[in-house]
Length: 483
Ligand SMILES: Cc1cc2nc3c(=O)[nH]c(=O)nc-3n(C[C@H](O)[C@H](O)[C@H](O)COP(=O)(O)OP(=O)(O)OC[C@H]3O[C@@H](n4cnc5c(N)ncnc54)[C@H](O)[C@@H]3O)c2cc1C
Image (cartoon, rainbow, N blue to C red):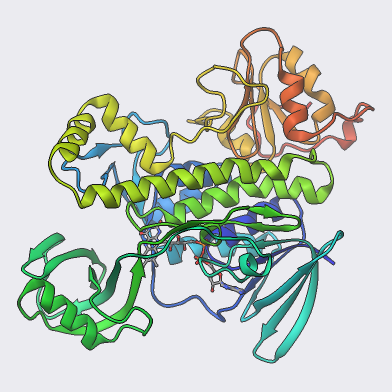
């Protein structure tokens, strides 16, 4: 029996595989497509996704290839949202193809020992008390595979979600759009062009343009070049010849969220857990966010070191975050359709420095704050710890918790040494979860530290660990130590 089967080698599945392998968990990734498609859906990583990837050294190779955009937009508001000064180590959005992000994650997961099986489709699953059995179809037939947990990272039509009987409530699509990655006979201006028949949105891409316009047609059948041409001409009110079409598709504005992200031994992440209107181009980023939150929790659960509630906190934290994404993207759609007093008011708010920052942090998820245990009112609690060039930047690469602080805290945390790396750099005291969120900040003595450690990492060992059993800390900067 393997430990974890992941269905789907998109951004969520691949980052989860990286995280599980970092913790030494046996991981099989089933991907129904024999190879990555030759079209690309997303083209950006936001500041929060970069902050998360940076914790494992995965952001730098992407940043080296991508282009930085230091601002964002909220729907049709005529205001640029500045990312400088927001709560991030990466105050920009990175232009980078989703396919390239997937390639780098796949290389990383494979190098760490993940068993990625392309051309293997999960068709069915059945769970019992000890594990989950899945049925896998390949070109050559079917086989069965058993695992302790199965994670559905298999996209919006998730077979895992359906097979596990997890409801996907929400709103159905009310409006469809056509998308074409095309080569037009004449240049099309970047941005929105309003024609007599509607709007056309154009985004330049290397060697082609992405064109989005309203879909007047049949929402089930594949989009043809003729249909796309007709829709474009109708919107603009004049013919623009499409010389070649690389990818034609249609998408809707449905917003749905799985009622449970964890059901027994089946877990959902990414588009399998939530779909929303494409406003703000955030799907890849939320998928990565889910996977990063889940990885260390599932690894500890499989290892048997996690407190019983830990996997449930994945649902609690990411379901709440997903609900905010649905609300934010739906609000952006509504705002795009309105003018007058509401749009004017929000424009004024967005022009105010505080409002500008709030909009920027909301649409990038930089305002994400998870409940802390014990609760407290320190402004860092529950938020992502910024690393700058400090010791956290390297200490987090091992995928463990990090405690920065003086000797009295190190001694107190010693029974959790298997899960937490100790380092200098924070004169007061700071406990950071493996996913970078602040679990505890010293405000008075060591109050609450034991509770926080037990909440996230389980009961302490009764016997002190001998020094040869302590985790090595090869990546840690000089001066840091494991306790
Ligand atoms: C036209 C379009 C444009 C977009 N643009 C952006 C953008 O600019 N920015 C952004 O952030 N997001 C964008 N998105 C959204 C983004 O692509 C998704 O949110 C993101 O890919 C979700 O990642 P995922 O890993 O959850 O799922 P997916 O990327 O959908 O990956 C799921 C994988 O599971 C595989 N699979 C499915 N069923 C099975 C099965 N039964 N067995 C095995 N494998 C299976 C699929 O083949 C696929 O590889 C866009 C989406 C679309 C459609």
